[in-house]
Image (cartoon, rainbow over all chains, first blue to last red; front, side, top):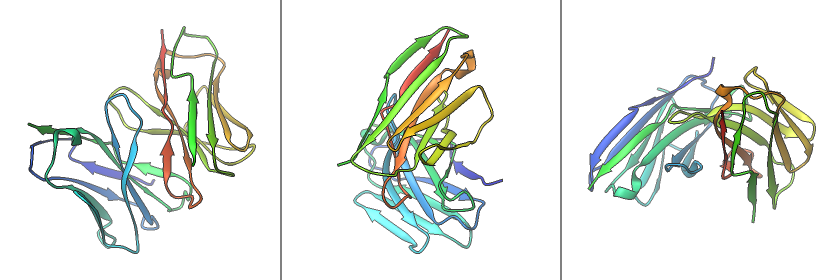
Length: 113
Length: 112
């Protein structure tokens, strides 16, 4: 079935360093890839998304890259800050289950001050 | 602007009791609506989704059910709660582009 693999499951970085989270999807028909940040006890919040007709998208310190051929996409956070500490989820949609997201299992990012 | 409400915010229920969680969306029409469950420290499990009034798709067979009696109202129910039903229940909706999902504040359910 459709699947999204996310790595790593936990990631610790020093404040100011970069963090990279990678996801691989199985459904080649997927065409929309959002990323969510979830702080402890709160709802997931959309932080950036990318569509399949774009290879890269950037928003200040956050960027997402997409490789359709390899079916993987990545989240890049530069100049990390303590408030970036959270769980990050990737997702893929637009495949055979048009209205559904397939979520990755999440990455717990810790930014050490 | 669009907003999404969920209630109650927290709930403690005994095993075997019924459940009703409500989600409403404002400021949009004909949204796709979703119910997710998140166990403590875990990922997001899609339970149900709806593309219109009375249209419910179930993703995981279990003792939960969902209904959409109105365009912007989505209800999650159970006749008899199990211990394993504990978790963080999140409602989500998609905007006009039907791509981006936005989550409600969630209901934290503890079944004892």
